[in-house]
Amino acid sequence: MRINPYTGAPLPPFETTDANSQIITLKDQQAAWKRVPIEERCQRLLQALDYFDSQRDAIAVDISQEMGRPLKQARGEIDGLLERGRYLVSIAAETLKPECLGKQDGFEKAIIHEPLGVVFIISAWNYPLLITINGVMASLLAGNTVLLKHATQTLSIGAHFAKAFGDLVEHAVIDHATAGQLMETRVVDHVIFTGSVEAGRTVYQHAAKGLLDCQLELGGKDGAYVAADTDPKIAAESLVDGAMYNSGQSCCGVERVYVHEAVYEAFVDHCANLLDAYVLGDPRSDNTTLGPLAQASNATLMTDQINDAVAKGAEVIRGGQARVIGKGTFFEPTLLTKITHDMDVMTIENFGPILPVMKVANDDEALSLINDSSYGLTSIIFTTSQDRAERFCEGANTGTVFMNRCDYLDPALPWTGVNESGVGSSLSKYGLLGVTRRKSKHFRLS
Image (cartoon, rainbow, N blue to C red):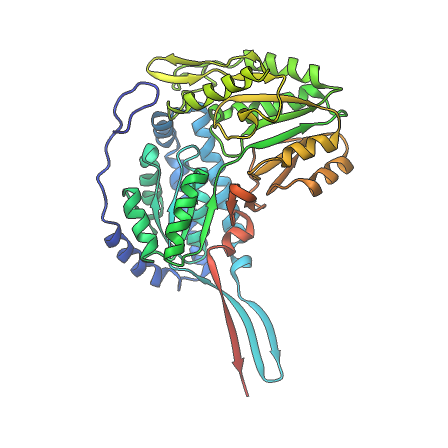
């Protein structure tokens, strides 16, 4: 049974759907949709985006009730959805047009970006709009239709996408076994999955049996370096927000920070002061800045990581405990120091509001530690030197490298994971091309 993570009240049920019938419908729709000129597709999809703008209050309430995010922050996710969707529309015609190689010696050659068919999107609960729009918008712009399986926690958001995009998106309420069967029998044509590394491996195995291509957006253990030349207060303001926002439930949230010894003490002091200002409580209140955990069981993992760190010499400066408020399970904003890399909190993703801070002696040590991870989603450097940032960027084994900011997806840039953080890219022109296949046009004219 689905429940509101703050009140414990049951959430409205959703009836299981017949995915095979939905796919038949989507295949029929896709045959017509792919023939619609790209300019007309863009206009129709812009109109679909207006749905989210007009329904922003109702959608924000659904997000808050289903996964516990403060209502004020839930409204902000709609702005991000609109930004990403409208950007993809703005580049679609140019990105997807055939690449004409010209006519020469009696031949005409071109590369056509052909839609794949029905794209199966398995989305996640932690950013239910932002994660989903990446795949849905790219797929539809490219001429595909979409079978959307949203997370059980946030099924209402899947229903909103179906309402917004009409007959181009079907909201599939199905179990994991059915989802696996759809991939293995190849009744869908492509898979986009967002979730944990473990679940991603399972999806990849199902897709492999159907010889399906996959885009996987998986976990992260994103690391930041605060260099000696930066203002520790400015770095703390950005990195604390990057670690605490959405109760830390973000694959690209800041989960470990390495600080040069010259600014270490000042950085820790600023972080402690910032954490003191967080307000835990009812997500419906405008005063609340940190909501309950969407999955209460995650508090156990975080507690275990903190206990492991303390046993190995770490110090808890702020927080460190799970708390029950109302009927919700919260985790206090947590700051840890005296950290070493043999602690689980520095190597295993926790998806919570925990900020472990480790002192380092120089840039090389920081970069080496950031790369000492099975993940590779984003890395961050705070510095006043672009040359230092360029060297850091060259050496960082991550899909995105930030300088003086964190935890933001620019829709013009590909969102890509390295190692266990994922396969393939979303957003940017590469997100559009990733839901097409190349068709070669090779005509002999005479």
